[in-house]
Length: 128
Image (cartoon, rainbow, N blue to C red; front, side):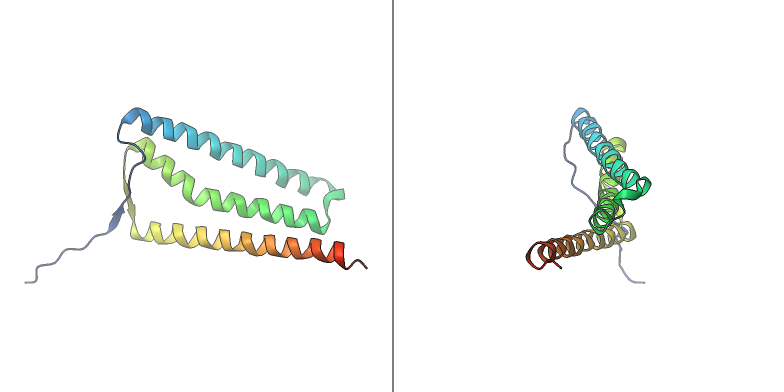
């Protein structure tokens, strides 16, 4: 018989120890999350519905809004859930998925910003 134990989850540090500050954290992050959803949703809807905005610049902005929605949706809901339910645990698989998705979205966002900058450079410095 061997003596061993295994951990199946990480324990996260809380932003605050008192319940009132945890609820304030929840409502603050909920407001920020809803503002991001509303702003990016309006950008996506406007670009998708207006056919005059189907140009390369607005295509890049549409993709940038989608990436921003993905990146904020990977981290903020878990933080809000932990604050609301007064929990501090996240399983290994959930943590790995969250880190992978966040890094994927942010690296894609940086790549898209680089492509947008190069597109503007070519349009200004080397016009047709």
